[in-house]
Image: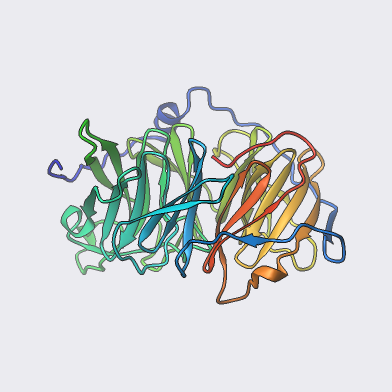
Length: 374
C-alpha cells in the first residue's frame, strides 16, 4: 500500500464546489406542505410470516447487498454469500470486530471500522485486506463519531469506490490546530493480483461543529456525498471540497421517483436538485410513526422503511405530501430494544432484514414493478 500523506486543505466558494460536484445545478422553489397521514397495519389480516435463514452463526448481521445473483451479508467476523433460491449459505471469516457500525458492502470491496482504523477487504477473498490507520493520517485523531449501526450509516462508498466518513480530533489549547470534526476521504481499489489498495487519503476540517457532534448519515449520490450531522448537512465532492446546504439534521436519505426524501428529527424533507436544497415535505405523521429513525428504499411506487424495531410500507404522494403508512407485522422476529434491525434489501419480491439475531425474510406485495436495493 502506498504511503498515505496528508493533503493541504483548500478553501473555495460554493459556486466552485457545486460546479465540481454537479454539471447542471438547479435551485427550484418548493413550498412547505401539510399532509394527511394515516397509519394502517397488516395485523389481524392473513399475512405471510417471516422465516429465518438457517446456517448463519449466532450474532448480528450489519449489512446486506444483492450482487451478481447472490445476497451478500456481513456479520461481526464473517462475510456470507446466500443463494436466494436455495438459501444455501457460504461464509468466510475475516477477523474479529466488536464495534457496532453499519459500513459498506458491494461486489468489489467491503469495510469495517475498529478503534482508530478503517479496514478495506476484498469481497471475493476477505482474507485479503488493507488498513487505513487514522492515527498515522492525523496525529490528533480521537474517535469515530457515528451512531450505532441500527440508527445510521457510518461510512459510504461511491460507485467508483471513493469512501467517506467523519471523526473527532483531540482538543488542543492551540487554537490554530484546526477544526475538531474532520472528514476523511480515500480511494479503494483492487490490484491485478487481487490485493486491496488504499490511496489518495485526505482529511477535511468541517467548520462550525463542536467536538461532541454526531455523524447521522453518509449518503453517496452521483458524484458527491451528502453528509449530515446534528445541526448541519453538507455536500462533499469526491475531491474533498464541501459546502453546507442545510441546518437540518437528516438521519436517512432515500431516492424516490427522481427526488431525494430525507427523514429528519420531526419532519420529512424533500430535495429535487440532488441535495443542494432541502425543504419540509411534511411534519404530520401517525401517532407511533417516527421520522428520524427511518432506513429504507423505493419498492415499486412505495417506500419500504424501518426503525430499529419496526417495518413500514409507505404510499407517499410527493405532489400533495400525503402518505399512508402500513406497519408490517414482525411479531415472530421478536424485535425489541436489545434485538434490532440493521439493514434491509429486496430480492425477487422478498424483503430481507439484517438484525442482531440473524437474517429474516418474507414475501412482499408489489403493485407495480420489482426494484432491488442498490
